[in-house]
Length: 122
Image (tube, rainbow, N blue to C red; front, side):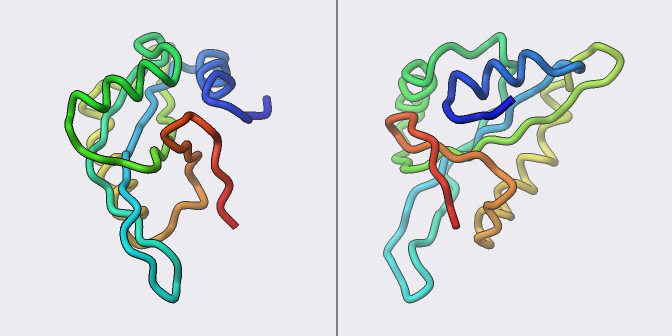
């Protein structure tokens, strides 16, 4: 299944053979340099696909944290034996995700802007 929107991301996550936990890292775009803009993670959260509605709902929830963000990166963590990963299982992958974003290694993640538009990085 091709993921070309936030809705198709949720559909794909729900269609997996094993239950998924989605990992979100929200990042702020910092000042531009010769290498481009720097993305600084400002907050992260993990959610089961069933806990998520549309992108507007995710964006509204993020506003409650009062941290400005420009891009949200998304990864998925697969479950086992028909059970989704526990929230505690998401901690290490979220830390790894934050480190990768800080180092500019973002090719393995989906990314959406504040309007819910899928971003493509080359």
